[in-house]
Image (cartoon, rainbow, N blue to C red):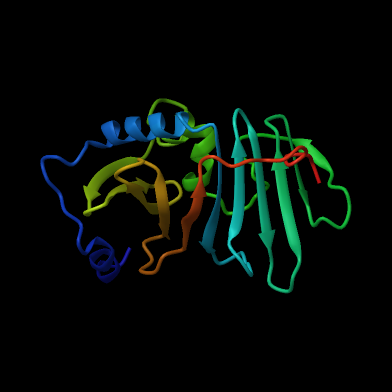
Length: 208
């Protein structure tokens, strides 16, 4: 990652004796996500392989239901739905074929990061225990006035990811990813319009 980019991203970030250790911050984040039974929010996406007309809308209901709605430039709509056992991706013009759901395809290959995944799988995603998502990550924490900045460094593949964690809720509000020591971010996603008491009507999580 470029020195200039690091300096810009780190502007205004402080480190103090009160800054939590990575393990302590992860524990608070897991507790926060575990206490949420349902959520609906939009995610602004900047990603080289995706071209959206509007932010993604992500809907979650525990224990394992997820739905992502996307409108592409040109007007096409895409929806993914998963129920913990099966998932389906459809352009809504015909019934979608279902496939077995795994940890890797729960969101149908959409560019969701921890700001979305943790609402269902915080115990796995925010853990350094053997077999979990951050087992081989190098983590550090700094802070701004209203955010903790959790930095994750991964060597295989070569990535550096910054998670902006709200100090009040301990939820991830933005994810910025750098790859292969490049100076510009590879992607970033920003969570907006968070509703922790959504009302999902009958059939909302039915397969398209």
